[in-house]
Image (cartoon, rainbow, N blue to C red; front, side, top):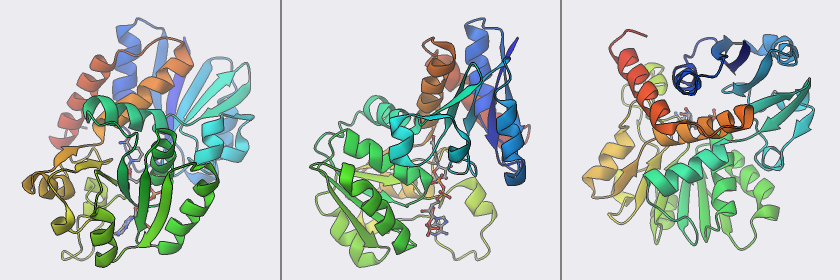
Length: 295
Ligand code: NAP
């Protein structure tokens, strides 16, 4: 018997065990995928455990994606570019770090969103870990322009400065989170990606002021020709997606990216192609059960 797991916040329930285990069982692999809730002070010990011969590797999620980086033995190129790890492979006691969020985002964009990012003009809301992966992905895919808008402007400018040496012909810029920025960024944009946590169930639960906005983007700047891609998968339709739909825009939620990043991790651990339809079905079931209060 071999083991895999997801290293994450003890207070947050990850969907990965549900759909990864379904995929492993479907292919009759003798592997158990577990939830490994880990507080920050327990991360070092948890990483030590990953070197055991029975452990194939792990997924890494909020809040450990950056903190785990110096504990790795080998870093894939994309990990260096993004500055975050979401997958670890144990190769005979050596821990090799990967970032499959980049591939997961692009596959979801192309397959579920039917959108070709090459030459696209994109607006990215947010400048955290997810935004770094998405900006890297858009540069890699040959986007013509990427504008990053974030509440904390210094974080957006830092992201853009870090990524600019790798941006090639992509016109990469940061703008402060002000109405005028959204208006100017929306001109000619064909893709808008929400990489903030605004609109997620967890951000709604921690909202102190009921008047607080639940969408990162002013609705009136959304045009009908744009694809609005929200990385959030809980709820399945966020207030941003609902507003975009109302304005005639196409929308894409975060579930396909979650599945496709997991499929890429699965391939790294097992060497097998992941049965993505099985993963989608298991994830949808787990989400429905959680909504009904069963999980
Ligand atoms: P993170 O590093 O904590 O970044 C959070 C981002 O949200 C920051 O840009 C932050 O702005 C912004 N933000 C949070 N609350 C805000 C508020 N009240 N007003 C304005 N901005 C706010 O998190 P992350 O790892 O990037 O993840 C971001 C979201 O993407 C999460 O909802 C996560 O679940 C989702 N995600 C989905 C997938 C997937 O596979 N579908 C993968 C990765 C992430 P400041 O910089 O100003 O704090």
